[in-house]
Each structure stands twice: as C-alpha cells, then as structure tokens.
Length: 412
Image (cartoon, rainbow, N blue to C red):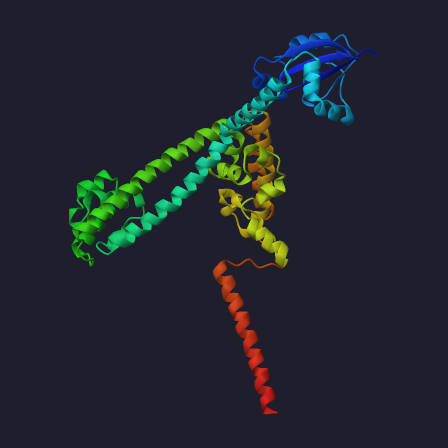
C-alpha cells in the first residue's frame, strides 16, 4: 500500500513517501497562497494533486487539505495528534531539512512577517463583509430616527409658543420643518408656500384661519433664526435617512434577498444587526430567532417564573402586530421557522430567491387565523387599560374585605 504524507507549512508545501521527498513547493506569495489552501481552493497545488493520484492513501497535517483532496477522489486521512505536534515543534528544522529555506535566522523573520501580513489580510477581509456594513447602516438609521424625533419635538414645542394651532393641523414633521424654515413668523405663511409643500386644500384653509386667530405670542428675531437652523437640520437629516434606507434596501437585496422578501429590508437588517452577522443568524435555531430583541423579558421570565415572551423584533412584522393577542405567538413561531430557512438559503445559495417560502408562510398564517379566530375558552384577553382597571378593582375589593374584618374585631 503506497502512502504519501503531505505537510503544509506557512511558506510552502512538501510531500514524502516514507522518508523520501517526492514534492516540494515554496510559495511566491505566502499569505495569499496559504490562505487560498486554507479556504479549500486547489489553484496552487494542481501539480501536487496529479502526483498524489498514484498513491493508495494520503495523510495530511492540516484538516483544510482533506476537503480539497476528497473533491479530487483521493483517499485522505489526518495525521495523528502526536505526529502533528511533532511537526509543529520542529517546524523550522523541517523547513530547512526539506530545502524550502536555508538560513534559520532569515526564516524566523519571514515567518514573523507572514503572521503580521496574514492577520492584516484577515482583518481587511472581515472589514469588507457586506453584513458588517449593513449592521452599521441600520444602527445609524435607528440613531438618526432618535435624533430627528428629539429635534422635531423641540421645534414643535418652541414654534408652538408662536403658532400653537399649527401643531394640531400638521402631523408631518418634514412639512412642518419646511414651513418653519421658509416662513419663520406665522404672518409669512402664504398659500403659495403651502401649495408648494403639497398641503391638502382643506388644511390650507384651516391654517390660514388659524393664522388670523392665533393666540400665540410674537416671534423674536433670535428665536426665529435658531428655529430656522433647527428646521434645516431636520430636513437634512431626513434626506440622509432616505439615502440610508435606500442603501439598506440595496445591501439586503444583494446579501439576503429571501430574508428581505420575508420581513422587509429594515426589519431583516435589524435582525442581522442583533445577531451580529448573517452567518451567526443562520446558525441560530428558529426558537432563538423568535425572541431576538426580547432578551430582558426572557431573563425576567426565567428569574420570576412568569410567562416567557412570544416575540421580540418580529413583533414589528405587520402579520404579528396587527393580529389578536392569542394568535401572535403562533404566527411568530411560524414566521421564525421560515426565517431560519430563508437565512440559510441566503448564506449557502448566495442570492437565490425562493418565493415559495413566503407563499407557504402566508398559507400558514391564514390557517392560524381560521383555526384560532376566537380567543380560547377560560382565558380573558384585555387591553392594557382594562387590565390595569381590573387589577385596581380587585385590590379595592380585597381592601374593603380586610377593613370589614378589622371593624368586626373592634366591635368585640
């Protein structure tokens, strides 16, 4: 039985038949060629593969070589742990012995540079991954939303001192900010400006009536200038938010089309950001995906023994947040199971869109809505207000009973 031993070093590759050297190759670009072999590519060892076809079995010191040789129908096994340790401990001597290098001191310096260059290359590759850029984009989007909401609230409160009626008539903050920036004082709000901003005709009439009857105070020059600057910033940030949304849409279309088709781009991106990366999300079971974003509620349930959460970020999906409470858990479970499949398709099929996943999910949701149309018997489902009122009435009843017992004891 002819056996060949293949030893992979950082700067080259050797093959031996017992103690006889049958193949030797020194890498021209060690970082690139070594990384290529570790990634399972055979580009730089085609000539070695041809030699190894003449052997009954091949033994290797690196498990990454196993996948390459198995694809070429070569019988391959990993060397024993003791043999691998012996190679690692005597690496410098073996490299010189097999003729890959001659000077030991120079070899030490080359291996040090190799380690530094390989680490730099791996860091660069990691930094270029699209899912990491997607995570940064969606986190920036959420922070932008907070900033826009904070500044918008401040503008409404500040400008409301001058024209409080406008706050009730306009809900769109971008339109509101444009009026503040372009008009300033309420007397400068013209019909032409409102028409230009696509304000409905009925609201234009109401705004003009409110201008003449407004109970707000006069707007001083310094306040007007400050409000115009704040309004301009809100408009710029809103434009930036739109650009970021488009970026997330495009990245999700390239990176995870099935997840985007299942959840929408923004929710899918938030799920990836919470998991850390698309690969990490693909490795999670559906039960974990179901409660991503509800970690605090889960740990509170484990600590206090209360009911665990039924959904986390998935609650943002319209099929869940619009469903009755008794259906949400079942829909979230069905959605999470389909997401787990969709993410794995995105990771391992690389961009192949499977429309059947969404169709199957919609059918499952329709089935849940039919079977569980009415709330289960023996359970009452209240909204938050009625639940709190019910708790208060129970506490008041208990208090009355205790007071009655106390009065009864006092009589005797």
